[in-house]
Length: 228
Image (cartoon, rainbow, N blue to C red; front, top):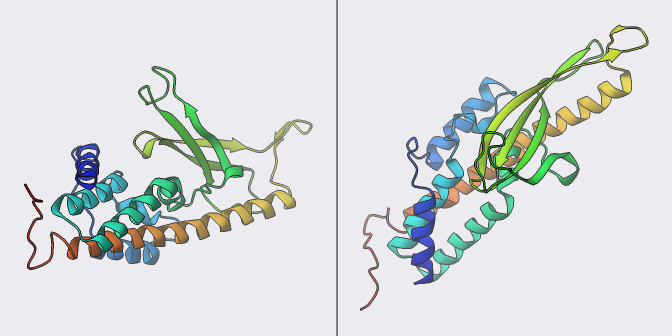
């Protein structure tokens, strides 16, 4: 009964109109095409922005249909990963660094009418370098993602256009060598995060599809209606 209640809740909170669900097979195609096309394009860019909610809904459908003990345990483990690491999966897969020291804001309470959000909610904000800087760089752009803690997905995006200015000289100036080195290290970490968390997202899709194939989507599937 508890599992069926959880399943109904997962389905209800994920029932907003969305594009068609992404299967593990189609996600693998997105993953391959994205890596072949460009190292700067987020691998999850082609996914529905609500892909995390979609996965929860699919797990809920499996639970509602009826799962064996080991399948129920697997469903629980998948949900634990999404509940604990959702910020890493959503933002990290786009190359945002999500460790404690990298956050712009963390679970900041939203005031009524503030930002593109509705109260009650909290936001977490991350920044990333858009491109790799060089010794001639005198300006750079930071991409910003604002995550809704309530809905566990991006609520807004913006950019910060930063100019390096020497107030003594009265003009723009290139980054100093130590700055370039630190920015390059950061950019490399972003690219690593993009690959690591995109791979983890793919694993989640694989695990959910396996769960579906073992429950409602198997050839001889029969719904467990319980007992009177």
